Length: 256
Image (tube, rainbow, N blue to C red):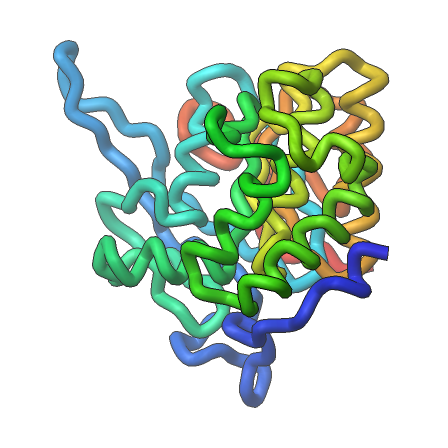
């Protein structure tokens, strides 16, 4: 199991007295988040007063038409982009207040990001790509990094390709490598932006099962997807339209 190789960092774990340092009760809270962009055609508001709460261990699918703000929402969570106004709280961290340097370090330890087009470095081998987050965050010894990367590749059925370049494996295989890379530092959260959008249905199903396994082992996942059938298998679905959540009741944590 992937969980055998995951060492809990504790960076975003455990709210004292039911709340984290900034008053958030859930692992992830977006409070009144607005994101404006300046374009040649004028100002464009990608997110409008977004409130979203996600508890530890949830699997949340974010759906909506192209241009609805799905990717922007994920970028707020990961710190890839910053809100124009509002708060992004993850565990004990107010993400929107971090400097660029602190933000990169925080992201490397706390959020595994998975993209539609894999974003593997083409000049590094598969195993070197998985080791990269560990190198960047100075986690584990050199020997442990290689050992850990190989075990993660075994869990995503890619160990036999460990010493190949990404161009030598298929798109579905590259996405498996990207997932192994995303969990390399054992982040509590995975943020996936259309992770199956570039895959055939059989491969997409295989990748989705990997996500379900990670949730079973305690990860929290926010996944942007265009696939409504896959989204129905998540804990809950958040639907965006024109930068707004159109089912606001589901922006709160869904308890059974």
